[in-house]
Image (cartoon, rainbow, N blue to C red; front, side, top):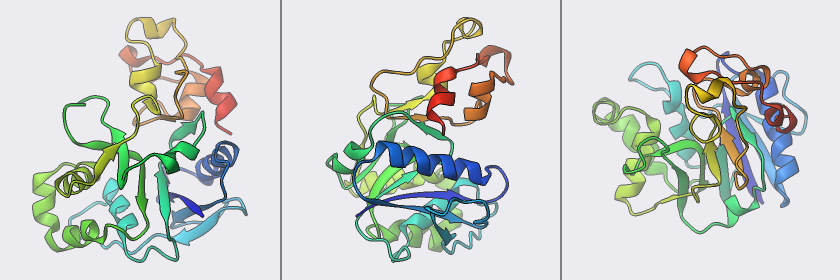
Length: 238
């Protein structure tokens, strides 16, 4: 059985993000699957979500932020086995997901949109075999200070380690699209142009600002990155 997992901790995202993600996965993934949300607060999660505690991750280096994602490489990861697709909470699924399990490769991640010449991937969507890469977590826990000096964040670390091992692969470019870079028009056209939904996209990633509710309402915080109300986000984010 396929596994789809996400993480929710702290107060940045409420349970509605996980509930909507689970609903979108059900609509767009035909094969049998488990949807697992690892969280410090399972209240408000729909009954169909398999809520699990956050994996142990005593980060000795300071604030966790995204570093907690590397705890998904723990062996064992609860009772999960087989192909496992991690998806961030702040995405909108707009197309079929079965290909994310069928695409060949040992570890697959999004190719960085802004600096595509680097091996670093974006960890909003990645696939791996549960329990397959425990060394990523083990090394960080042993050498956290050195790792933090060498790389900026967890996605750079994950990408570097798997690239060195010859196991890093990327999704087809059109599958995972940045809302900011792939949907919104550039300034000043963003003021009069509604963000587009790319025809071949499967997952639209909302990294930073705006997030899906902002795109639906047309809320902006930057003059140069104004977002108009985007009806297709409202139609898909449910």
